[in-house]
Image (cartoon, rainbow over all chains, first blue to last red; front, top):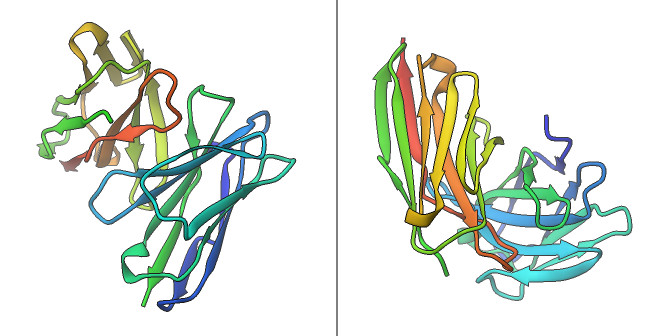
Length: 111
Length: 109
């Protein structure tokens, strides 16, 4: 157990809808990173939040957005869902740039 | 950005066998981690090993930073070792971990 939790565990949406995924970081960690893992691929970096500010972003369009709250938990929001957004979404918490610890993930299916 | 190449992509072994998984990086990384992804998708930290050698039970890892590669050794494999193994690295000053494509390990009884 890493102490990182994510909700929901599974989600089914239709194209064009919006989705919000949630992540609670491990106690003592102030940084949350989000990754998207398509079937059969390695995780791809979406963005990172450090002390409530976006601290780096991967090659994802602006319809992927996020928030970090004062307790360091985080949300990932995806607007105008597309079929290719179907994936496992993983969040990882860390103390700054130290080792990242991953949550169990949210499986999103877009129909 | 950096490229991470893992080999082999697939490995099928009998219980009790030993295995070596390799990870090559296109650039120097200062944060190198090995993970095991279980069938439910959870990424489990195995090693943080930017350089040197570490051991944890039947698993050990070696990173040769000057030659930009890392090796994960699994001895006396058990069926519970099955799953996908990922290595990931981060450039100095960068935020993101860059993952390889993974090695799918299947241990048959």
